[in-house]
Image 1 (cartoon, rainbow, N blue to C red):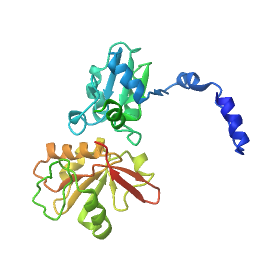
Image 2 (tube, rainbow, N blue to C red):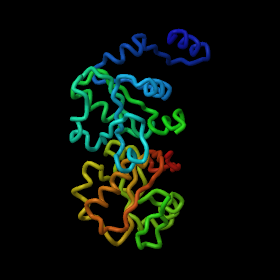
Image 3 (cartoon, rainbow, N blue to C red):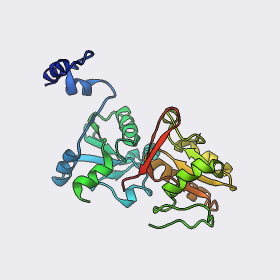
Image 4 (cartoon, helix red, strand yellow):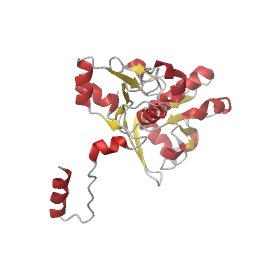
Length: 263
């Protein structure tokens, strides 16, 4: 099929065509690589109680507790080492990791960690929980005492429209903290953002300012929400903390597109 498609592309005028003749089976034999499964596959396997372990790599309190795929274990990627005892002893067992969709890297990061542990049958459900809700059929403002900040519908979130206006007209009123990994941050972020990845945030919490709003951002709202709850746990007296519950695309010239996250 790939050869036939390549010939069709050539007839359309494409001049730089290659064929990966080894295909998907060869891909899976490359050390450290893994495959991806579809929403239909997940629905089929869950409905017949297939012999597999499904792992939700999203933050537990922010995402998993509000909804998850049936039978899924909660092993947040940021705490992967802490909860590896939940993984099966059989290293050949099918493991399927998922998170918040195509823009969320958490399932991929967890899959790589599982492979490094010796698991040999690892997959990701890359479309993640938003896609699961579509195939399975399956608000409260935060009170902070800061009347100048409009809260979003999710606990701890900031209103998206308010955030956009503030970022444009009064950027100094907020400390925007991008909690993605540095490699992601380097591909583009908000113009005023600083980078503190979630796995480095705990040590920085005592030094967070009290004189301006703090807004955590990532790419889907998962890690930024995790950062918000981390602050609430470790420094509950800090009342000016928010996160952006949204899907965000960044470019290298620090342009961005913000859309409401799929719940």
